[in-house]
Length: 328
Image 1: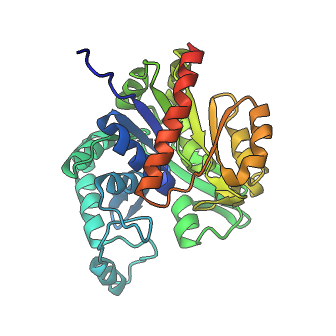
Image 2 (image 1 turned 120 degrees about the vertical axis):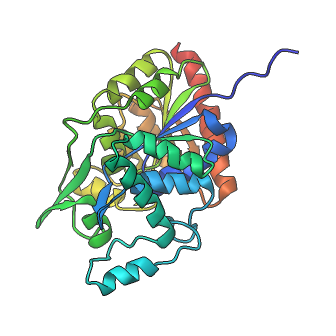
């Protein structure tokens, strides 16, 4: 009997909760054939520790220890350390859970010992039994800042400290001019060669989750090279019915001169995405999105439970597979 064909390789571009949920569904289908490239522009330093929110959200989700109620952090978390820090007069608006602190302590110590961020990330994932690989977009520090009507704010001050209330007028990525895609990221992209392989853009914020990844030197050219080999790119809208599933993407689309809709997201992805996935609520926008040059998939994109995550992942892979054959 001939060997069964290998599962497809998938590289996901991800940030935050939407990226974690989709990665969870993909990992259930293809296991270690999944690589997730995560945004590091949201990273920050607190209490002398490096915090990597997007990486850790994906890691905890794929390890099965995430807090489903909050959408971030670890299940069963406590905050005794944060309460003690507050007692010492430290700012605790960005609360770190007691179990979560262990991740940041191990990461920060290893970096101070000269290890690369990617190496540390992979070791943390292995310790938690994660099957997929989660790769930081770069080893160099990149920090997202947003300009509001009262000036520039680092991303976490805007997102957590100010509860996403100020209008965002501009976005910048400090450090992006020296950031380079890591060998691991470039190797993962170069490995996408079969007709079933694909790149999937999570339903993450286009401005502060996806854009920083694309801005890293070497990333866009590697993506373009994969597409030139016939590897298709699918993107899932994080806007449903004019509202962001989570976070401020809808308000950013409006304040940055776009349209808070799936069509508004699709316009940002013209030229490098082949298949655009939108929710059935927005089916009336499908003709306009197809007119931009996309193939489309209209389905239920709300990943409300494990079954929904796996279903959406399966539907995206089924829809994108024929595109690979046509692109070759």
